[in-house]
Length: 497
Image (cartoon, rainbow, N blue to C red):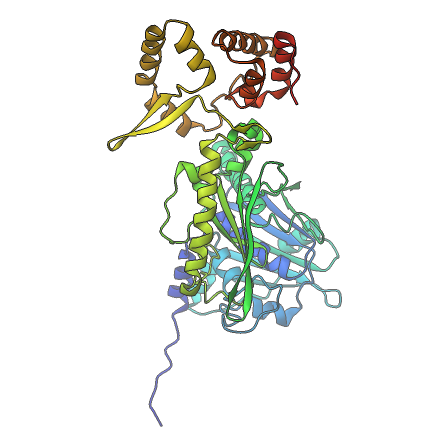
């Protein structure tokens, strides 16, 4: 028989190491909401209460609950092997989430639970007690204060309350009268609400939706794909075969900023902004794992591709293939899928760039051809410059009839003094701040400009019919077909189709 020694981990050392998995508070709370959803909860209520050193956070759900034996197993570190089969709807994997997520935020984890057929049970991990005794002693006594919280937060119904006490990493002052510390504590609630609205947005809408609240307020789902917006484009929608199964991949190009209201643009940009939100969104059982990443496929985040977002749906038994970590925040594509994912990414990136260059315009106007841009991008050696389009009907008319050399000099002056650095800086500070053509301009002022354009084109001998067609495809008037129709009727006696 081979000799061996049993070397058990030192509880007082390992328990402190389990606190270092790198959870932010919002990701730790999301891990606990996973458990609530797996337990078939229809309502999850996250509560944060400030009381200095006695502050606490609770995650309350109306799920199936646990009896004493199941609760004991749930509190065991590594309760289920990552390789063990899971039910289709299970959002867990490593059997560590409840413990590592909680220990990362607090030194005392209390879980209270009841089922439809069993009374209230409770278990507590007190890390100070574990360190003091040097052993994995799970406390079984339910103190009166925690029982009172159960009655306040849950009542006599099946479900579970996960309670975090001794929030040593969240409470910056032990003084409950410290207003600055209190404000800091409650900013956590805002971060948690935004994060949960992102991670679980597909659980918050549609058939079978659940309710998630933070301090009594329902959180709003954040749809990264703007699927309900009329100008969002579905670029590809396909299923990729992998190990005898199909992985759903659907790609979108979001509307250009010119097609969004200020509020829509801010919301769609998310917490990190438009440039950082481009790329793949990897879901595991509809739960968002990775938000806005090119998955190491060799693509860079670029301004022109900021409208590209791709939804990828995984079943929960492919965690190992995708190298999903304990915190459910990292995923890497299997090598066999890389070529297909790159192909899809290239298609949606090209479409995003095309929409971005045309500033969100519909590229073809039925019966009227391409939109004529006022500015062109040109390459001079290794540098990029911007030129006024001399084939633009108005520019061409001015060059022909209004002293060509002087107009040409003015156009060159404009071209050589385009404030590109200032535009880039302002766009980086707030991409939604730039105005669109004639934004908030009275229609009468636009009509006046249109009338001047019509007269200038007439002086060049352009026929009335050609003027009508060119106005409908001339930037920026192509965005104002009703005003083009009105001015053509008034100035030319022509009606547009």
